[in-house]
View 1 (cartoon, rainbow, N blue to C red):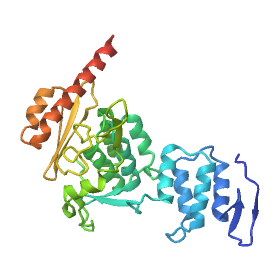
View 2 (view 1 turned 90 degrees about the vertical axis):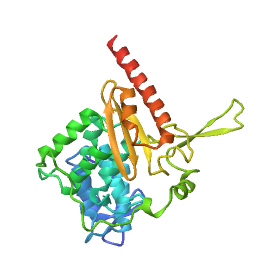
View 3 (view 1 turned 120 degrees about the horizontal axis):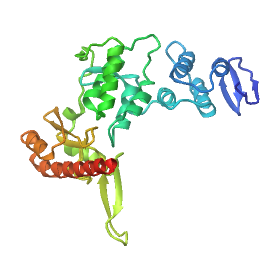
View 4 (view 1 turned 180 degrees about the vertical axis):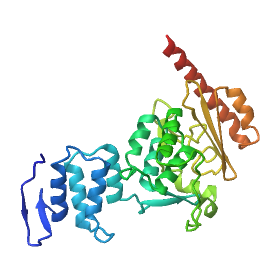
Length: 320
């Protein structure tokens, strides 16, 4: 049973005061009725709140404030909270629920969550299950945009073998064939950032501030700091123009492949990405030959060797 804050109705019959804040009366009453049936809100309840708040496909600032108040006062599942928070306060990079990637229309909140999870590691099956809660399956089907998003996650992001099997199974379960490939939309915007700005210009924008940048002292006196990067596509983990995967369209990404000692190497060059998987670092080095920038190969193979050695060490320790 939900416990109501002390409240009263103000002059405007469509508003109530809760916790000293003017809130939308109808939305508050809808929430209180919903909370009597649910101890915690899942994705279905989050979407019901959002639908209730919409007035002719628009949402007022008071309704936004009401949803923020509900999110602060009532427990939500993580995926439901992330989805609703994104809808109430969209990131500056996009104010739309759907966006295009390479001409394919995808569901932005699901894609953003998958991208966040895979920034520094591969997506494991628990993270995939949590992400799938953001997909509306209440009708027994998933939308084309959600199916497109799952396909893009499988083909563009780093997922464990178990995650790949799980997500492919989800597509099959909802009626999509094993060879499903999204169709590119004729209405997709033609703007492409990599065609509009040089890599040098992008580097000038991001070199002093980006989400992957962190600094460490170069000596014990802290008189000098060295800039490092957590980008998966930065083969030296050093924040410089040469190794930046943000600034350079051509890059190499080396991550664990999901198996006991598997590696996954993604080589992006001339707008195309080639993905290699295997457990033999030397063999993969030969496959990369001719695909990647020459100045990155040595560093990429050094990173692959170190990751492979760490995986084999962990594999050996787990057998003891």
